[in-house]
Amino acid sequence: MNITIVGTGYVGLVTGTTLAELGNSVYCVDIDEKKVEGMKNGIVPIYEPNLEEMFLRNIQSERLFFTTNLKEALDKSEVIYLALPTPPGEDGSADLSYVIQVANNIGEMMTEYKVIVNKSTVPVGTADKVREVIASKTDIPFDVVSNPEFLREGFAVEDSMNPSRVVVGASSEKAKTIMAKIYQPFTNTGIPIIFMDEKSSELTKYAANSFLAVKITFMNEIANYCEKVGADVDKVRLGMGSDDRIGHRFLFPGIGYGGSCFPKDVKALIKSGIQEDFNFQILEATEKVNTSQKVILVSEIEKYFGGSISGKKIAMWGLAFKANTDDIREASSLDNIALLLEKGAKIAAYDAVAEKNVRKLLGDKIHYAKGMYDALEDADALFIATEWPEFKNPNFELMAKKMKNKVIFDGRNMYPLEITEQNGFHYKSIGRKTIENK
Image (cartoon, rainbow, N blue to C red; front, side, top):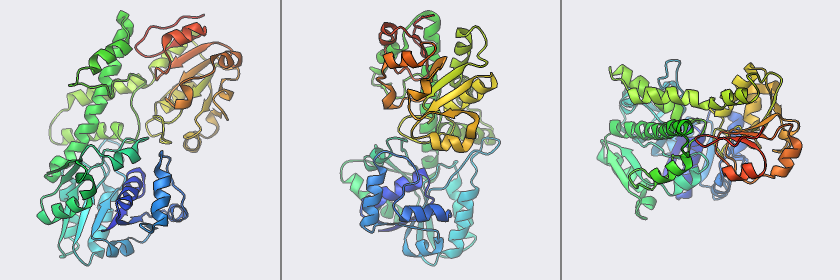
């Protein structure tokens, strides 16, 4: 089947590459000429494990194409996926301007039946809005479908090729048949495709992400309480997760959630509720707790240094919001950098993958180290903000030689307590006892 993907951000590029891998001819459209030219030459514009191999394979097999010409791609395809940004506005609501603009363009350009698939995360009722916009521009028949993605950054290729389910919101039997054909390679292997109405499909994505944000935040609250009463959150987490009604995933405490989805989707669902005179109290509490959780270790750093960190050099390992991605959107590292700088600290950060994006944002406000141990040179303390695999088994002896003080503030609970104690480090993590060493 011929398919067009409008938008080559994270969702669009992974979706387009996956659909090409399933044997379709896929035309990816983006307005950024430089980006499109780079992709034509095999340059993947985002960091995602295993994506480049699949990307290049499908370009070479002539199933994956890139263009800035929407009309050209539209004429070649029966199915048009909208994978456009829906950033939060000042009030937290999702900005649909990109989606509506492209819907306008499609309505003006289409010359035959099309299925328009909303892949972007959008508020309930967006399919209706897209349908109204296109219908105002043309009399040619078309259908609008909601097909949310459930990709985890860092595992997107795995998730795209082995989804737990495919959710499709459609009221047209013709559109359902076409979508079923696209996803037949999945359903043939037992992966369910769940058909529902468009509004339920749109809400499914928001509900899923918001629930996971609540789960993470609840565990962070439990972790903070563990510290008050002397319990160990790792033990609590294992005990809870062994209940199959709860499960082990998303129970790892830390310095809050970030990224392009959870913060944005929680805000948008809260705002959507307000518009319907409905108060998502649990989500409002989740957002509030997460904001404070992100920088919970800064007060601990100040406490360790007697109330002031002015002039102190803090090494930071990790800048991405999570491991295996270069995404720094809503990253906890940025909140901590801002607060640490405000309090007069100096920062030497290391992240081999996300550094480029942070440089664009912060410039020379911080120092960028060439390696994880280089960041520790004469550091008063180490702050771990991202759980990159290379940080999991460090050389503690070398760390001790590099640092002024053997002090670690770990926002991702990377190390067993006994390991840091054996190596003589002062070690503060989340929801566990502090290993004292002064």
